[in-house]
Image 1: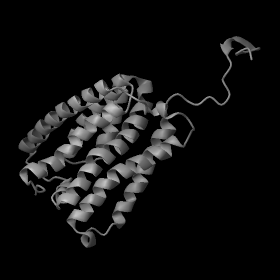
Image 2: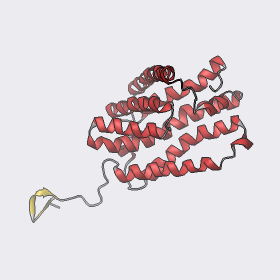
Image 3: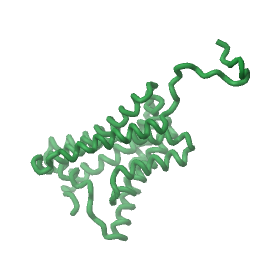
Length: 241
């Protein structure tokens, strides 16, 4: 096989069956559609029957499961290596860098939420069910940590950074990081969490881009999510009104 076409001697011939090197718009659409489809199931969960602790645990688990489902839908669209989604090995150094940026993101988003609350007087927390779950006793607390600090970061990072941001990076680092972070924030709902989610998503996107791996971004996300159940443990905090 010469690698060129006879009629175009300077044009390389396409490699038959070559897998695309990164996801594209079909994967973005399929992945987000899968996430939205999984979200519809929440409507059928009887929150009043489960009680606040059990319902909080279900929602906490759903965030990660739905993200992984969306990622799976996108990944099977075209067969390729998971490395195309930046799911590849990294170093402990990059994991520590991700955790450090997670702490920075936690502090920055805390200041951002306080500023928005002071300016608008808006205090309703749409994540109150997580406080209920974390405050439901030791087993519920441990499950909340597992769901929020392990399962959710993996599921959401695989989808929003591994699929969405990676696909948009074809248009450059600015559009890739900003675009993926906007989508990530919007899927958290139009509420006080939206700007904080955008900030965390932006930092996670840049950490992934620079490290070349999804796992340091997972570390950013995990540090931020672990703060909520730890806040309940250390202070006995309950869901804000």
